[in-house]
Image 1: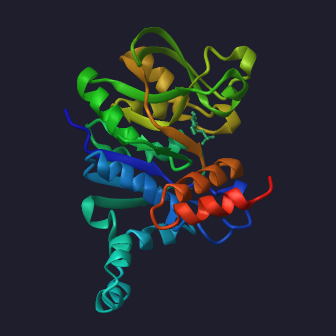
Image 2 (image 1 turned 135 degrees about the vertical axis):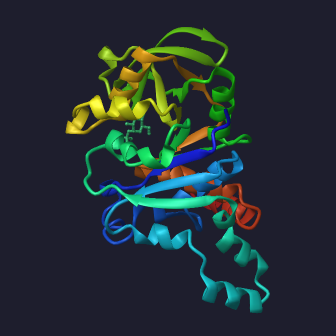
Length: 287
Ligand code: G1P
């Protein structure tokens, strides 16, 4: 079965980027000139996702507006012959159906995903977290949907992060590997290094079977007093196969300021219109 649906949770307050996120959703902060969420939506479109649900919350209407048509602006750009800008404004909008719903209470990632239950129905679906921007030749979520087609089971996108970083992530325990695919036996959310079963972290990309919803409904509050997707995935792994796949690509943690700056520098250097001048500027700095 092909994976055609994806869910992007975008309901968090973005407290790590205050004061910028007081009136602007963190997903709308730009890397160079493109809102971070647009990179994620583009990744979904490039992987052939047809229906996308973005889960927002109060004060995040800018995201909804961003993925709508903007007739007045578009006609001004069209009349002025600014086709590049017109393309940038339209970008992913026409490539898939984009739906929105609100998570009315902030009760954690698991609870946010539960808001997608009726959208998902009985199909496998992708989950893409906005704090993880992944650059590479093949869209990360496309690598996971390809594995889903092979195994017909839940696939978690993982990379090794080093034991010193395990307390920031959902960490998997695995019992065998075949190349880049591992069978998941257990998971733990943000463990201390001494308690971590490995340094293999789930980095914001998942393809999950719809059986997860029943698991979330049975899951109580976990780490940080929130309903954790990780805890529901542990339940799922007891009932059906769950795999971890070591995906290719460079992942940026744009949920923290250093990661955001690293993404900004790398993305600017990779741009045809900016890269050369920006490289010259960086070289001129006496660091
Ligand atoms: C979430 C998940 C965690 C995952 C991480 C990836 O945590 O709960 O399992 O490893 O995203 O970025 P958060 O960073 O939202 O606290």
